[in-house]
Image (tube, rainbow, N blue to C red; front, side, top):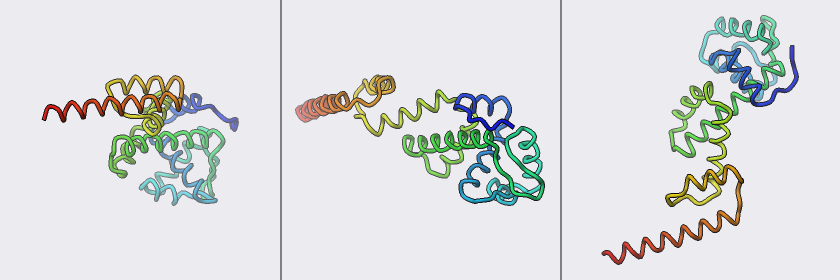
Length: 187
């Protein structure tokens, strides 16, 4: 078994080449259960995923053969280093997508959770990184004007620059003040 830590691209590539979305769901569930409990059991996984225990047992055998978990029938199970890395990465994708859907797009939490679960299996690390940067941008820089997305591209390339954001806020306020005055004059 390979217990060396993997980088995000290796994890993504390994999970895409070797694992189905169902396998990823199991690794994510096992990862989350292992964060919540000392010992993960078949019945815990079955309950979490809403499947029968024999179904879980079959999948655990497959994951064990692929070096993702250490499992002996009727015993507790553990993720290997590789399984833990992949489970953690899948959970991070899920949480990021869910946050984007709820915080940015204002999708209902339950619907966002369901959609994030479907999306997490196909989103690339590059797309995920861009979504995270966009969420950070929305939280820290002014939002308005026609050049808003251009400002996001600059933010993504150069990071948050307090002075630049402050200058844009001032310019935005000035532009809005001018538009408000013009609208009032038309009335």
